[in-house]
Amino acid sequence: MVRGLVAAAFNDTATAERLLRDVIRTAPGSDAADLAYATLGRIYVRSGQYTRFATHYEAWAAAMPASTTVRDERQDYEKFRGRPNQINGPRRQSSLRHSPDGYLTLPISVDGKTDEFIFDTGAWQSALTEREAKKLGMTIRDDGRTLTDLSGTKTSFRTAVAKEVALGAMRFRDVSFAVITPGGALAGAEFGIIGLPIILAMGGIDWSNDGGAEFGGALRTTTREPNLVFTGGRLTVGVTVLGKDVLLAFDTGANGTNLNANFADAFPEATAQGKKGTSDLNGIGGTQTFASVELAELVFSIGGARVPLRPVVVTLQRNATAGGVCCVGNGGHDLLKQGSGFTIDLSRMVLQVR
Image: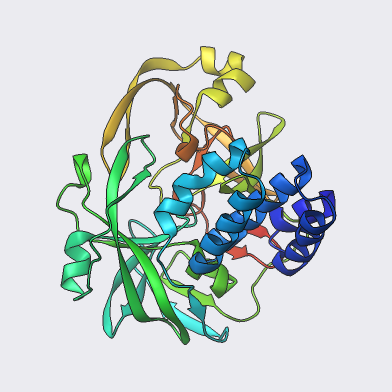
């Protein structure tokens, strides 16, 4: 069982599926089987295998109808059922140009129409706003569902499925997108998000902050020591700060790093020295305001690279979508843009900052 969970956490999906299915077969109805079902479900969702996830969930619910985890995960079943499995073409070496400013964006073609989408490791599904979907001529299904954004705000979404998505030399078919009408500061926005189902198929990326990106081939990592791990429902990165090893939710779609109440608990002396106030946490559905502490500077060690942030905000909340369950915060792309670039290698599960 443990070996299967470790394989799932470090993205060895073939090994994880074999070992976890062995648990389900040999110990049906057990707590271990319940955990194995849940872990396999997360693997299918993060890779865009939505039909497979729905069938898997139905088998799980039939085998273990009294499971509280089955009841908790039904929201994902309702969210993703009815979508096709994403079909990934061969992994092919690709080079693209991107804007060196603002969010991390890449040019992507959706059913033959091209735009810049945000490269977002914090998104378990690809997404776009309703205005963007209409601009691209996508058909939006009338299937209202709900998600929770970074701020903790619940917002409704519908679904659109692209017949073909092209990113560099790579091709994907039957790609599902959540179609969202943003609220708050993002109301009326027009943008799209490349989520984990596509990013995992890419295998990772070499990103140069001067405007180049490469993926689909060998990646430029010089270490084999993994620091990325799937923790529950998040891709997380291990960092060292103030002499302690901690986890951050790894969210390249977030403009800035935001620490949370778990950080305040782990580092009470540092937090006590900060400037108290309030701060907004902006999500795609709206904005929420929390009590906060501002620290003048923190230095993070990421894979041996020294990354200082000035200032750093600690919002005193534990939103699951902002890393409040797994981690001391939500690590944004400001951690990645101070040097010459970075590499995300999802085969070795390594984040290296240059």
